[in-house]
Image (cartoon, rainbow, N blue to C red; front, side, top):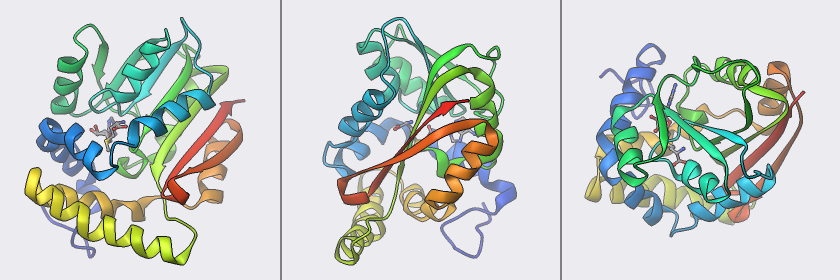
Length: 235
Ligand SMILES: C[S@@+](CC[C@H](N)C(=O)[O-])C[C@H]1O[C@@H](n2cnc3c(N)ncnc32)[C@H](O)[C@@H]1O
């Protein structure tokens, strides 16, 4: 695979295929790596995100880029009906192994096989930087959510304090790639930290959500700003 000028990132025209095959490869150890990289804090952030959109029993929650189904599993524990979607077969295989009765669909996040206004809530964990067409995905979320439906996004971010930014960069650029090389896949765990450069800044992200049809977007920070949570409502 040809890489772009940042040698850990693929060229734009190859990104989608690069990301899909990367997640297929790392799927078997994805959960282990997540728990180690975040010292087990990642599930707490997903719970906080579900609290933010007040998931109710019986509501339909679509978990976009569900991976191994963490968000979907937590939403089911709250009595919701969930559908997890992802384009990587390997990740969905791991999701189905964890939750054999769960509903998981292999599809691109930009082309969801759901009717307009059919979901009450959509969740998306740590996937924004992996999408090639972020605006297309936001437009698809706006189409599938019912008016007043809630969307919550989790992503990595940069702490605001200089000292914490230094520690964060050390963890992200040195600890994560070494851990990945040791336990999973060298190229993947160099790409994942580097891919944070794809993320738009706070104001740009909110503007792009509003353009897609969302309103009242708000950002909350976890872990001193290392993680961002954006919640918004379908206008
Ligand atoms: C970092 S993982 C996050 C998984 C899970 N949401 C979590 O919270 O751990 C990113 C996921 O996004 C999926 N993904 C990336 N681009 C996608 C796309 N265009 N359509 C569907 N899934 C996509 C990948 O296959 C991968 O499973």
